[in-house]
Amino acid sequence: MQYFYQGVWIFIGIVVGIAVNFFTQKIINWRNEKNILKNFKFEIDYNIKKIDKFIEYFRDFRDCVNGDVFNNFTKYFDLSRLVFNTTNIMLFNGLLYKYLSNENVENILVVISQFTLGWENQLNNAISQQKNNFNLDRESEHEANRIDSLITGSIPTTSLVRYYSKENTISLAIFWENFLKDHRRNLKKIQTDLEK
Image (spheres, helix red, strand yellow):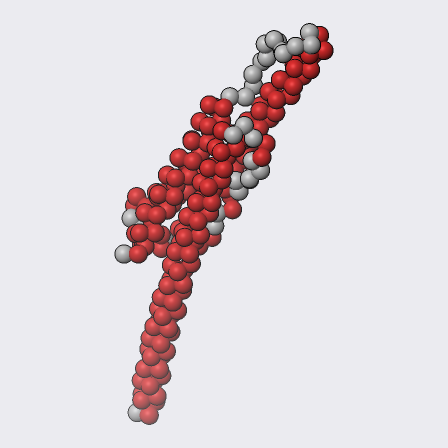
């Protein structure tokens, strides 16, 4: 009989041990999920602020273009510096689907896919190309002035080939500014979704 009671107590001990481990793991998972969610909210807020900074850069960009001092614009759009570490963890753990609507999951996936080094290079290369065109026009205009003044001693009459277009440069700025504003709006929706 004594062995029977020992077997029952061992069995009860095993069941209690399993229950303690189960509930301990549940509490640890709950705390981890809470921390991940807090970090995710921080990332969204950080990324919104970073996008706001980029939008401000485009205001400076347009001011430089409109003031014909395009060479004074020296900002670099480091789009790939947005932070998505916790977002990726939540995506792989399935927590993204738990806390966000389907529309916002789609929005965050688009943001992640477009704030990459490739898009960063595309934007900064387009700006560099416009600056190069601006400089080519300035150089060719200066050279034409110099040649005409040497030959005729008067104001230049030479027709110049234009590489730079202020309208195209402003269109570039508007396109990218709208791109950023759309993503900012989507991140704000996600932020609102998380506050509920």
